[in-house]
Image (cartoon, rainbow, N blue to C red):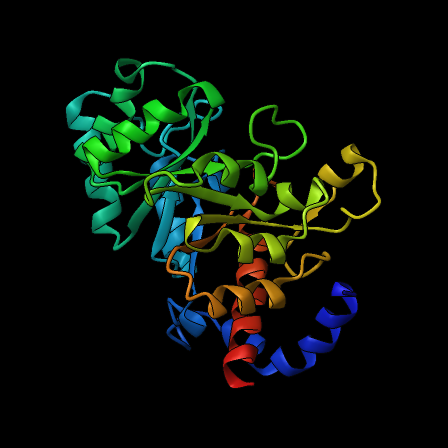
Length: 293
């Protein structure tokens, strides 16, 4: 399939929706689930900012669905899971008071091999009311994680991290280990990392089915027949690359996907908002076009 040509032809139909989605909040209330799709954001996008600034940015975007980074990045904490109880309660309250729904947390390192070693992560999620952990485990502790999923009723979505990930580089590698396990154990598919491995992202979404619990989305200008480092460094604002978002959204709609599609914007860390706004405007426009087709 020529995804680039398909996308360019699609934009004509989506143009009206894109224009409407770009209107400032003063002129239009943004639909939180365009075409039934929950557009969310991974707070790693705002890794250079503290929780207060991050929440202010997300409110401006009118995005209610959040995947929170609960560990420090460059000294900034959005929700420090190792902080004292009072700070934990304040973090939870700050997100709730802003009207934001924390749907997942991560990416969370899960390399401990024992239940006791992993239990603090699940205790934190339970106490914080966080229903899902996006995780980077190892093959050796998959059974232990499944036991904790059952004990705590917390979902775990394994995040595939591309060619550099020696454990779970592709969606297929995740699906292989969760097959036949508790239905709350599944995949957080990162479409950018998936595409860099040569995975057909639309087919992988279809193959995942109900095991697709969460998503991280981004766009790349190169990933086919491209040296790995070059592809990795080609991330761009969503809509400026070659990721097949219309086809992605169509497949999610077809399978009645109930999770979030979280923008994880990894470029322009010190000044992300222009690119983030453009990315959401593009996705909202595509969804508006699909809804009106």
